[in-house]
Image 1 (cartoon, rainbow, N blue to C red):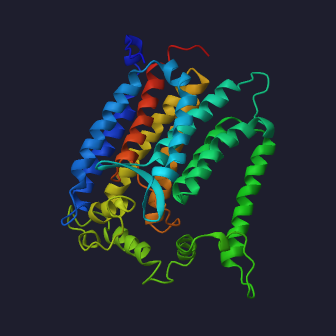
Image 2: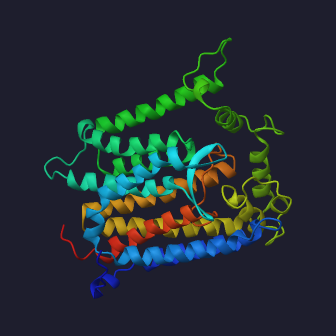
Image 3: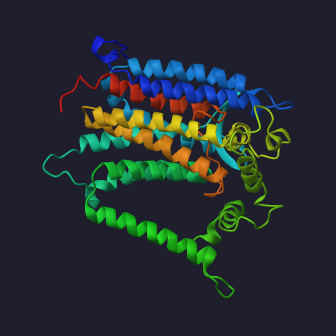
Length: 385
């Protein structure tokens, strides 16, 4: 693989995006230093290592010849598929999910990298399928895109990892919407949303005589069913399935406007928060830093997303534009779901907060995505429309 730097390319580095990512990552390490208190291991030190690896990945991917990435899309997608299949043979099971490879002291989660592989493959499909005289995407032309997205999503779902599978569906749907589908496709997506709401109402809200008729509720695992029930009725089972969700909301609310101060959070210090260094890291931040700084954190994510969308808008090639949109969608939906679940607005699904939550796979996969954004931006003057 060829690494090359051109003067025109380096002039187009999206510095606003880069600075936003670095500031958010620094805030994440600062917050992890409080979240990982004794007797827990100081995971913030490991996070610094993961960030360093991630920065190296950004530089390496940014300097790669753009066409090398494009040509490697199919092998990368298939490699990620193979990794998901291999989990059934040599995967490590933790918290009921067979989602990790254990390599010495490290755990690697292939699903995190599969999201990027899916984005690249969808971008290649829509780039190769470009038809100037037929700009709208109909049902038949979207079938391959649906297969590209749904096959790896199904492999992630059976691990089982419902949260990551949902993020992949939302990311793929965003990319498909960016492809300018026909009004019939948009109408079908609207109907699908309405059907989902109908199923939720029938299975959880509608009063029915016993035995109840349900569409999907009877197929869910017990903990998945409890999460949806707890979301719809936040005051139910506060000593059981809703305990952690309530503790998270107490932490977020008790932070007030200015917060309790670094390492002064009571919910964090007493370890009432579940997975406070990963899934519920925002609860730690909100309790200790308060509402004002939480808004500033959201503003940093806004800078990252706007920077990424700027890359999509200025990309001179369809492939790069779709890659940029897909990576922005991937980050947005994770931020949206994570903050929504820890504040009680959305069901708990076990989704990490990008650049803030502890984890090597999460950090490196997001930084690889940032590297792709930088690559597309640096080379936006090298292609003609």
